[in-house]
Length: 151
Image (cartoon, rainbow, N blue to C red; front, side):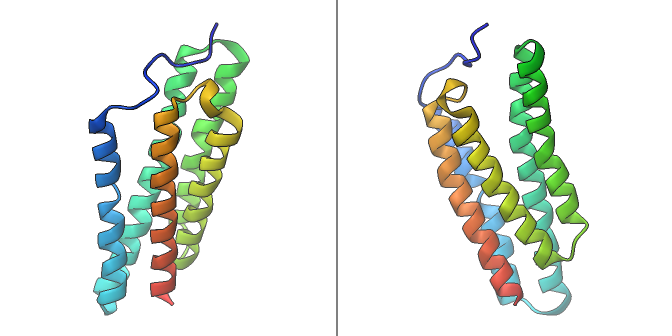
């Protein structure tokens, strides 16, 4: 069976728009950490951590979709890869905000490396990989800014 997912090299404009719009909660939470004080600042930090965890889990779920279309050992590998982001996100939620945000940044970067170096265009459309690169850079930068703002 061919492992490549059928579809155009470019992704739909709606997917791009929604992907970039999904960065806005990261921006809002980082602004909250930088500009608010006390309990409101703590809430913004926890919100950033929670949203980052949800999005990291979402990225792993994409690979479950691949696994459902593939037989045998390949499906098992995609299932394992799809679960790892959720485990990292869960662990991040159990940590203090600064450490949790650091773990999320490592999780986003690591999963990006996996998709680009291990999976690549043999499975993922180049348009998806390009969008993921831009979004991952933005998310990791915003998580880093959140960590810095927490001091």
